[in-house]
Image (cartoon, rainbow, N blue to C red; front, side, top):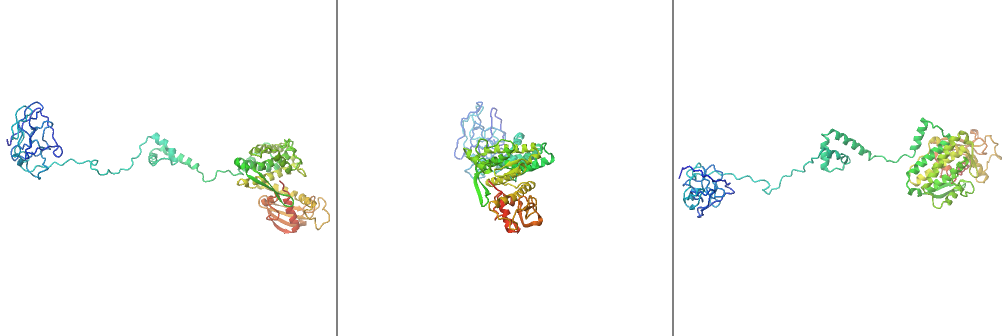
Length: 540
């Protein structure tokens, strides 16, 4: 049947098998049988048995076929034109035979199966190529059939590792990215979220502006400087306000220092904690011959100021904080001890309220009373001062004890304003002759060596020049022979120079006369008596 044209068998449904993987070879050399008696779809009997039917000798495999072979599910040849009509896929090679072996060499050895039923019910003839088998020389000729390359293997099936493509960028909605701006400003986003937000900021102007505002706000949360307020801030603000707009009822000049120092101390007390109110404080003074001290607490110091300020309050007709308490003699020390002993428990921070209210009442009362009230006497037990000097005295003691409290709680505290410090030094310089005379009467100071009697009141006498340097500085001539005498430069016998704050510490009893850093020139005995008289101005 060489050169015959294959016929189309109706009713057959052919399916090509890829020769490399799915074709099944029926080895004719080993006498493999074909699919005998396979029944087609329409009951037609095949004309040629399959197997490794080679067609006529020398046909080989039909060139140009892509692995067509057995019909799907029938075991019969498709009978299509150009196919080998064999049960073996065209172009396939036996794996157990050397490459290049011709299918025709095996054709004589292969025995087709007899009696295979085709699709039309006809009996097939054994050994023939079968009708429509396309056997003969074929297109490929007797030579070797071309190889069909196998399909490419996927990289997933090769077993080799897949390439690392890196993490995929986050794809977030605009509302999600906008909600992440706060966390991004605080550096609280994950690396992926940070990358997504920063990429979004390059494309979205409103979000970029919002991110900039949030970054500036975060910078304010971490200031480089301390948040502690300057204790003198309130005083400076009040001074500026009063300079620009005088109060409707002005505070007398001699009461301004007390108003400022109580305000500074109140600001200090507001900043300290509950436990610091019980911090130990040692009150120090000079009792005339030697240093003295008394141990108390921060709350105890405020109670001391409350009771001594009460002397001024009583003189102005205000309530006495010791009302109903047997105070004994009206001295500052006796009043303080009476208050401490009357309390069932040690003073606490609750004492701040009465002290603060009393200080406000004093300033308000002297402001309404006017400048003429400055001459009102205020008794201190063994001596008395005018209201003008008493308010300066209370301002001085308020500053001194505020400095004691600041040292106890480790808080910075500055000296008073220079103009207030000057008035305090002036008060101490004016009462120095009285203190010196009292020491002479007590036998604690040497009598004048060059005079046998006191100088008449108003007459010039021996004098000591007191020079105060620095803040609140100035010069004062201190009469040495009599409190009623006047200082005279012509009768100057000694010269002492001290820093303003150092002189106040001496007058408060915080520095002994021997330790005071004072420049001295002239009569050493007079200098010593004046320094001791300055230290004797102190009290608890």
